[in-house]
Structure formats: C-alpha cells, structure tokens
Image (cartoon, rainbow, N blue to C red; front, side):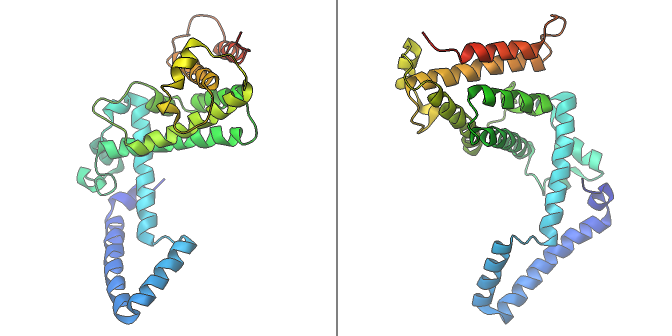
Length: 262
C-alpha cells in the first residue's frame, strides 16, 4: 500500500511533478544529443528490460491503493455505491487528484472486474493444464469464490446500474469457458445428443471458435449455470438456517453433472 502521506503531501505532488519535468527535459535533451537513432535504441532497451521510471512506479502504487480502497467500499456498500470522491477523502487528497489515475468510476470498475476475471481465469487454466476434469475445475471455482465473495459478486452478481463492461473483459471470461469446454469434450466424446444440445449446435457463438461437440456444449453450460446457482445462493447467505452443509450440496451437484447421460 502507498503511504498516505506520500499521496497527499507536497512531497508526493512534487515527486510526480518532478517526474513530469524530468521526462520532458530528458526527452528533449536526448533528442538533441543522441538523435533519433539513440532514442530508438534506448526505447528498445528499456522495453526489453521491462524498466519502469520512478513516475511509473509511483503511479502504479497509487492506482493499487485506489483499488484497495475501492474493494473495501464494495465490501461495505456494493459496487453501485463506489465513489472516487469518497476514496479521495479516505486517502486525504482532492477528488480531481484521483482522476489523474482513473478517468472515472467506470474505468475503476473495469479495472477491478479485469483483475477479478484475470485471477479466476488464471486459477482455472492452471488446473486445466494439469488435466483437471470438470469436477476439478468446479472445485477451483468454489475455492476462488469463497476466498473473496465480494470479488465473485462483482463479476457474477447483479450488474452495476449504468455500467457496461468493454469487450476485452468478455474476452477474459471466455478463457474460463474454453477450459471448461475442453474438459467437458474429453469427458464424453460419444455422448448422445439431447434436444438442447442440438439447439446449441446452431447457437454456439458464446463458445467462440472452440471445436467442442454439441453434447460437450450442453454439459459445459449446464455445469456453469447450476454451479453458479449454488454458489450465488450460498455466498448470499440464502442457505443460512437450513441446517445442511452447502459444500456437500455443491459436491452432489458435481456428481450429478458428471454422471453419464442416458
């Protein structure tokens, strides 16, 4: 986390301003003394080394702190109540100061959603490349959701009013489905086609260019909808007071879903 005094104080402001000044003066000086060839060579070297300037590191730290405060707000009041001005107050800076790091609420929400999807996609893919079947992927999903329910609800809960996620976010979520489709295709290569599977054969845009057969499409989407249904009810507390173990219900759903289709 960034030291709040570093964000709010004059030292932090001066550091950012100084970095801007250095970048401008250094860029001009380099252009005069090193020429275009030198500038290109230096840029390539920095790109290869993955070097970050002090200004870039400072910016990354502040953005990370803003996101940390945003997650706390979401946990307390939900994503629809997310406020950059409230975050600025908590950090001891003016509202306009935060708009140098995020253009607005929607950009901040997009960043949080991207982080959440990327985290889940990476966890699912890590299991998939080791040969996990749909049951194994289902366990990864539940473990990930239980570790941070607010993160789960941000991407699978009620949509934030007035917010529309960009296409790149959909692209990350499709990675998760692709791994599930691969696992389902391996589970039942010769399964009989159900009426819904036959319907999916002509309505498979959601599967992208994945070559999964209709039966695998049916199993994958059934896994996805039923397991999210159980998870959403559990995490929202709807099983509280019903005197049964939600983990066992989830396991029973997995067993039923991976049973051979007759």
